[in-house]
Length: 639
Image 1 (spheres, rainbow, N blue to C red):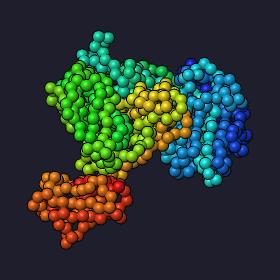
Image 2 (image 1 turned 30 degrees about the horizontal axis):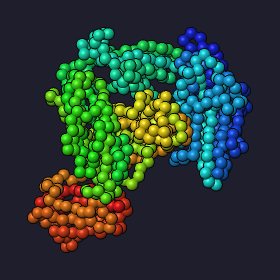
Image 3 (image 1 turned 30 degrees about the vertical axis):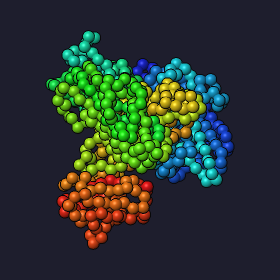
Image 4 (image 1 turned 90 degrees about the horizontal axis):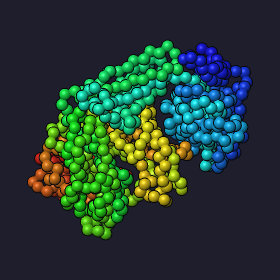
């Protein structure tokens, strides 16, 4: 259908028309009232697309090409005419890239000015994307929605700005295609999700909690928003037909009144209130606990942990949280945690808690321990594995006791990136656990020279993860969480994260969530995931890629302690020793993909067998030992 060229109308009544629309189908470019500009070394400008780069709709779209600006920075601006912003009228547009693959040298930004169209210094950044999260997949148009709520009643100029930093003589960055630019009405539904022990949701019985998930289902997919600390939520949609309901993950233990709201609006521009009352259904005690490492381990340094525990059930709970660590190599030297420890013994710290309400989450933060050095006794060296765990207990019988403990096995490293992502289950899981949650932690630190006013973490969930199973665990600071299909975003507005130069401890932050593998995941599947971290709309910091392989890990048919492997970690060789009467029949080494990388023939095996590792790359491997007593699997690290 041919797009309408530059419609500017007043919003009347229910706002049945777009306030502003541009589809770039006119005979001239830039369209009347628009301007283009360049900054830095940029010499070209925005123009209409050309083959083979398609428009989203119709024949034309706005297009900025890749240009060779060696070892310099270039900015390309496309700026709208003046637009008066009405309530609930965000900026929306469709955009895409032209190349598969991501380059960390380009930013795609929306900027706003309330004073001038041509004075580029008057513009401030509204939103920003790197190539990783601009559109997914890269060659598919994706709709972006940018809130203009802060400018209601004001006249603004909006700018589409691509910033490219070309560090070498080779052209870098990607093209940007933009189409169907709209500032117009939306449908807004919001209200309270209230928990009430008596089901009345009256003033005397209501409790409000944050991060209760509210799902919105429409033909475009499923969006998820979360309640604030005051129990409020708000959902903005460009769809006229959708259904709102608390996420079914909280069902079973609760009755929800009403169970859902379905809207079939005739037009955009509607605002409705939808409150949910959540009440107990039967008796279901159910707690969960998660042990979170604030950062990685390094010999001789202080390491920090947080413990998050939550009441997933519908009964008021009181009990004890316990933290276990290896006191031979870790020392809790001072009362650093908050709240303070209630009891302490060798390798154990514990805290008592009372009246933990359904949906309530609490955090024990700042558990600081000193890790031994290579010269201490016992010594801690790079590659060693440090184990710790947390548990939660009460007098009530838990409905799902498996998540009442949380364990970590961490490899000691020489150094680490302060902005990273980890999966606590590690680099391999057994196929038997493919229906269990994976726990992810995205950690960030402000290593700049000034406070970070805003931090945004974006995570494009891989197809091997099931977005419907996403659940928030905790964050270091209050954040607004949204999930649109497979696009996960955590916005830390007004975080004011101090620089590490000023306050190293307070310069850190994190967000933790859990999610299940997709139903299509099987043996050999590799679940990879990466996040982008934005500090005040600077170029994103791309985290490491977490990788978890689904494999068949042999079930121990005998006590694995009957065998010793050493040294572990190993460099050039590793020794397998039978500690009882078992006879070693075969030894096979596998990498994390489940691929065999070495095997030892039976005629070379003995009660103590040394295996040459010199041909293996550094990394984590599995050793399958078949003996006269059965089969077991052990993990080792090749340095």
